[in-house]
Image (cartoon, rainbow, N blue to C red):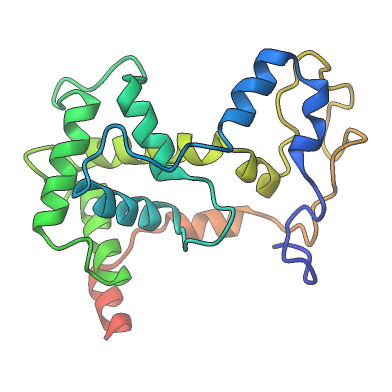
Length: 215
């Protein structure tokens, strides 16, 4: 819940205003995320639209200006072979899992489906009621979310959204503790208890109820 006038949760906060306090290597790594080039290096032209649709559904993206370039960041990571260093023994390597799952989503018409249909399929995968391209649903959902969330929250735009002050090196933090802010941090506008929101968000989706609402 943000400032009713600006719509921002942390009005006026810009983490990049602190970039002069980062060392040169940190500054270079973070600012490079602002310009991903907009091209594809791993996904094909046919895979791109279904991957964008998947990421938009997983993270509730709406294409607003300034959103983190999640697709481009996942694409770049896969192109460079940057994984988490492991994968489940009942799953293929990450790159293959992405290609196989996107091909199956395309076969099922995911790209052109409405939001309710997309969410229903993803929920079936998450709840392990659905195998996709022979892969266990819960493992595949875990893979999608790890890549999507890592991409989203690695971007400075997301840091502004959550009020994260950026890398602590070399300056560090001195005001540690609940509700103790550094001079450059901004108080959250309209703060409220997040627990009820999280509990509601994590409640399993009832496919039948969702279909009734969509109809």
